Image 1 (cartoon, rainbow, N blue to C red):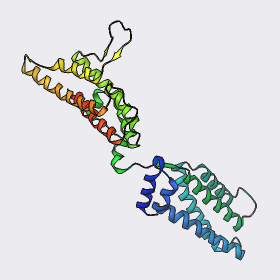
Image 2: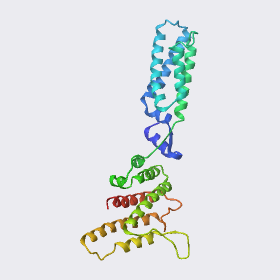
Image 3: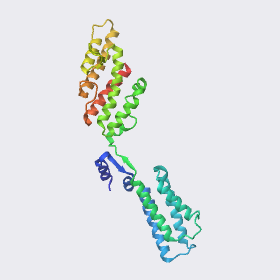
Image 4: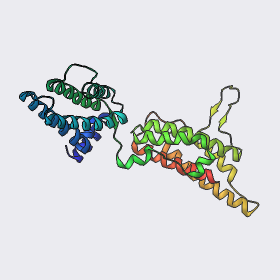
Length: 290
């Protein structure tokens, strides 16, 4: 399988999962050389020794033993990094039988062939059960370490995980989940902005004990009413202009949200999610420095 074929196969899979075995076979020189050729070479030598009934002092036995040591060393690295428990158990079994003489009975070529064949099968079976997610290159930056910036992380440290989860959900094609995380970020941001201006985000209708959340329009109207002129000082005017830029970002979020309230819709597609992510980032980044 060529590299483009493997990538196309990964991208086409439901959930974008690909097994470790599929990755190892076309890409890993260690696997191709040490495991495939190594086991094949060992099995060939052992069959010759078995056919010729070579005695234990035959030099060919020493060659086989050295190759088995190299094979176990190479596979041991994979077992350690990937937690291949069954393969590791078989490696120990072979070491005990061949090198540590845990069984006093003389070992024969046929027995080693069976041990090595079983080792190969366990190795390939366990690799086939390890799945990896495929992230397209364009979405890779959203998967790890995505941030709204240093100032945001300092001002809203409690939201850093929400932003990371929103970005990671986007990278995994979980667009509606991403927007739900962004909703939680926006709730904190709009509440913070509202407190600065003295704008409430909820209201209690006359004669009704229940609290109603304001719509985007009501929130924006309330904010605009607080920042419009006239201005008594140049500083007040400049401050109002900064806040007007934040209102522009809020307008963009409102349009991208496509819902009268701050609650997300039932579902969002990729372009809608990315649009919301970018606008929320712009709003929260500016809010962090003003």
